Length: 511
Image 1 (cartoon, helix red, strand yellow):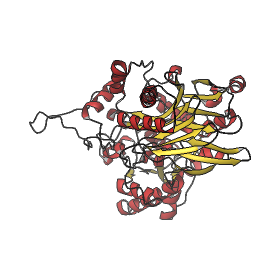
Image 2: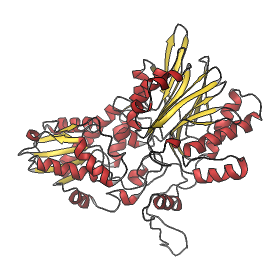
Image 3: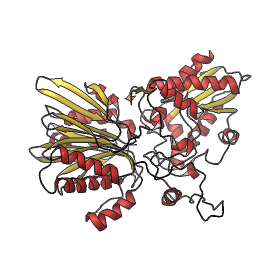
Image 4: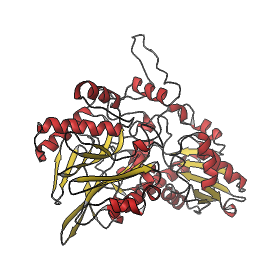
């Protein structure tokens, strides 16, 4: 998960890009970068840390020009806290290109070998974003045959990228002398939206991971970039688009609606806030069915992303809703922090209880999800220390049981509390008096209630079904090994010599 931004305007864009990245800061806290273009030159500044820490006045003054891109990084591939892997990335052959990417390529190692042996390109970092950039550069060279770029050759190059690259990717690219290119993978896993602002000097365009940046910067939301679509905006503000993938399946990432996106965002025609309200409604329904005799005095959310679900759950059950935790805004999201010890310590630094909301009460805590269980266990303990007589826990998402390989930091099953435990075992592990999870069908229904046209979702972390069709047992075992965890156990269960894995792996790629 990262945040990307691209702007073509009629006035300098450095402040627009900075402000937009601030709005998208929740999508990545590891590094930030901005690139602009003026007079045929690319200008860039990037580094490790939050947006406010990376950019100083002198850096902003140097970022001149009326068009550019920005990125906030949350590391899922490559190395954390490595300034060399901050984005955007740059290549100058055969054309000057700057790229910022959100997602994760599942065939990046294969692509690296192809580029070294056949494309004669060298990759300097461990980042799959640099791989994506070099694939695009090679395909632009092949499509243009070394001649000047035009719409046809650019869209043909993106089509070739879709044929070669697997996984999840939404990207914004600066092409020297041409303009801003944006494209989204054929499954639409990672979000990308388009905004427009009409001025006396002409139309201005903004492409962003989430619509909140479009709102905050005074643009009007136009639409989402479609799966497999490429959008090209030249430096004069002329907008063109084309479907570039041979076959598409719209399957947005469900975890965007559960946790990643801001509640005030619209993604693929779905209000994230309304979807989370619906999650609370379905969760209340399940609570009535599974815990009819449990008495609850108060419903308390774990701030921030669980608030809408907790509010609607309380309304549906007729139970008072209260804010029982105060969040320290200066501590990063524990989900993103590396290492269990750091996560456990940061929970106490990030949250503090309002004791009177817990003392002598039976409380129902609501969180957006339970991933590793570290935060949940600490929060249950804090509620008891504040005087709660009973502590029940509700997750607005189903159990997270499988690795996510599309850009979310859930790479190893060994880290997931639900990977090998039943609900009852998880309840004991987090020391709760009772636990309910959202059903996956109800989660899908929560989003479909807002946009019924979405037929598929990327839900691999819940059900082990990988929509791109190229995620094999060997690949997952490699991810486990790379992250320092024991490899996934693969057994020959039918005597055929074929490896079987306890996952619902989709077959061959649909591309």
